[in-house]
Length: 307
Image (tube, rainbow, N blue to C red):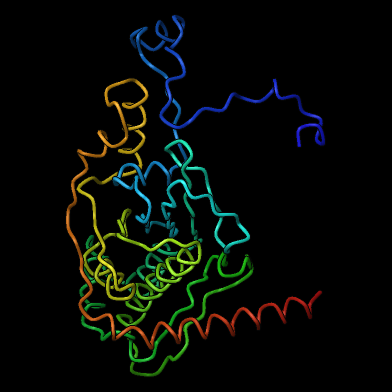
């Protein structure tokens, strides 16, 4: 590849495993920053991979999902390398040597909830709008009385790569209020989470646990995710889990911890949300998949016609 593009390997940085000691800082850096000359520089990791470590996700079969502006789902495949041809999710090299993880990414998740806040709740001058939205959404029955969202307000990465895809609300009637829109967003992101988990099972991995991170790890959203996926959702007693993982990498690299297993022994769960009514979502989820399938077909036909 380097020969093809005319770049010498000497111009590229050396590769290291994550959490590996590289060197001490230079005397010049120590002088300019006031740091000790004994300060160690260690290699880091992708933010989502650091979040996996910060949540204690170092074993095969554990899934870490982060609901922030976007939705990112990381499934620990252990030492089993899965080629991209086996499924539709990219495979990344993991934090531990010779380990791998599949990653699902959707461009819009919490950003859609923010859109609902700004669109339907902007007349309210109060600081707890998200809490109010959760309380209103909690009073809406599962399935939102037919209101369903295809949550592609910022495009689609999976199950098709269509950056021009847009969000679709269907089943709207005169009885639907802003609370229904709020819950429809929460449910749609949970459907994306389940969809990604089912894709991962195609790699031969069963999900033994799901750790929920990010701003979307609130009570109602986590409970909906548990009911939709049929699996327990675990939250971590740390606000910035990716930063926590990055600190663990530095601690392992500098010898404060001897292994990742020792580092994650300090991880504490905050709460566990177990499925309460998973059967309610089976038909709704299948409807979501069916509408997804037809939407993708319509998009491709439209773009093909335009070309």
